[in-house]
Amino acid sequence: MNRTRKKGVLLIACSLISMVSILPIIWAIITSFKTYIETQVFPPDIFAKNPNFNNYIKLFTGHTSVLRPLMNSLFVSVMTTIIVLILAIPAGYSLARFKTKSSQKIQMWIIGLRMMPLISVLLPYYILFSKIGLTNNRWGLIILYVMSNVTFAVWLLTVFFEGLPVEVEEAARVDGLSHFGVLRKMVVPLAANSILIIAAFVFIFSWNELIFAMNLTGTQTQTLPVILSTYASDVSVQYQMMTATQVIQIIPVAIITLLIQKNILTGLSFGAVKG
Image (cartoon, rainbow, N blue to C red; front, side, top):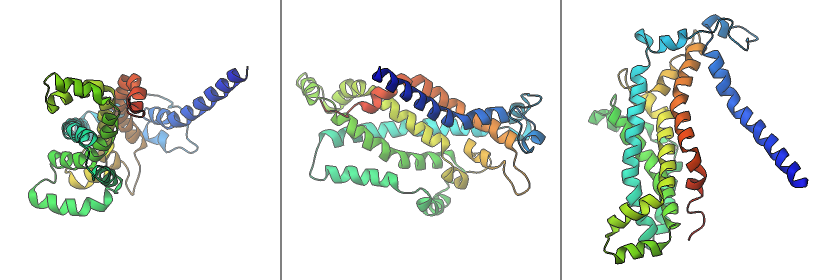
């Protein structure tokens, strides 16, 4: 009976926490169907009097279209994720398997770089990229996003790879596989869940990044988070357009989360206990 009560209390607590977390998203969805006048009313009405899709239509038509920024965000995030995985998988495997006296220090240095605030390096990167022509360029953003996310990916992958039983790799080496062959045919498939989770995190970090995107992009290379910041001015705040754009921005993240939700627990727990 006590166990049943504990489960009930835990379920209620988790439900309340989930409601608190999802409430802003629900409010954004509701507001996205309102008119500008309705968003300025105080106290605000919970629901729109005449809900319509006009805000979403405006997002994809005329001079207010977010189609280009949406494609920019998608391109930058996908390319960043691919490049980060290409660099991080062999780097993480090397740190996990080819130990030296400095391996631990290297890992701490790598994660320390991830902790550095992005704003602290914005000005040097802006000056450098201005001189080499990488401002107002999607590849400039990709380079910065790769550098800021590859440290996170390498650190986690090192932990995950260390959790794999070495005996499996040694058996593969006896069968004639090279180190790269072991990595490609044995290690990557075994750590697929963890790699998938890291790829999702890198994509989401790149998709939501604002500081670099706001300062290093132009009208043709703006990403979706930059567009969100343009709806607020000294004169007014276009809440209805802002929330409609937020809903569009949330959709890819929600889809990714739904697709990999079964892999999350396995991926994050992989390597926690070494075999």
